[in-house]
Image (cartoon, rainbow, N blue to C red; front, side, top):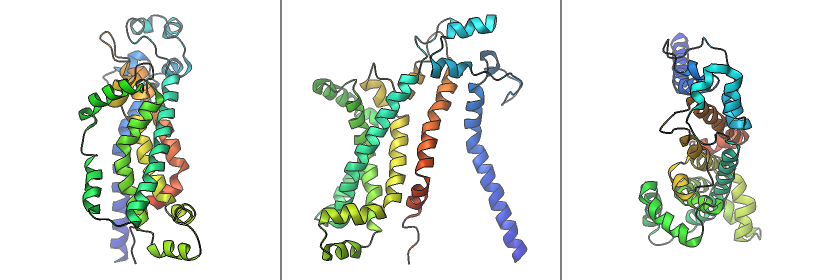
Length: 300
């Protein structure tokens, strides 16, 4: 029996490693391509060509603003083909800042509204509540392409086009239904007796929410924040239609594909750099995130 259990454990661990390897392979290939010279990216000798000299040039262009003409002069004739055509600008520092402002702003606004709405829906019963919850969920069924044109005209009339405020509002609009439903489930896991005890002790409803119940669902808030942040950080369609001078990272990456060139080195460099903030954010809330994802999974 013990040997059978040990074999199952080993098999489970091996399977877990294989699954992680499968999911990590595209990320590893992407990161590897970002440090390849232009000619090595298209090498056909294998799925992961490693016979090259790593170069930081792609990062120097996208993150440090070094002119690719200067890079080409340093490399000599090898980069001559890269210098012709391509996007008008490869400096992506402003795009990273734009994405950070919009992602952090929309996540904060979404959590502010969603926690209040979710707590009310969890603690207050009213007629037609289930239908209302389904209506909230149904908002996620609608693809962004179905609402982007009306939003473009509305934002134009309101003066919100090509502004941080406009993108923060529209990203919050998309995130809010899912955030409300997730947080409601976390609030439901907190016994109502906790609220009643606080009210008996003289706390107001607002004090009960802010000082008693809210700290108990920090894990759920962290999990919801991660989902909202990742959506806003990676969202492309709405950012493309609603802005011109403000370019988020996904929109900036799309400019590296033109009719004359596809700059894979710069695409992979900026794409790899764009992954890092998400990892940092997840690491910062990891303790609360794990607790939030497992909250309510065990019942007495």
